[in-house]
Length: 71
Image (cartoon, rainbow, N blue to C red):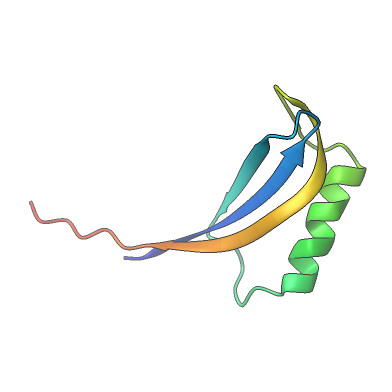
């Protein structure tokens, strides 16, 4: 059974990428809503990282994974 994950990638205060993953997001995905959500995460300081606060949206992507049990 395939699983889907939304990966939201941000830049932190030290300039390093930070990825936040959401398992089984609601689909279909609206890119404008994802962009707005990411900007709100930054503006409200929802998350922080060892390299400081999140300061910039870098990218967002859907990752699909198919696992087949053989034994």
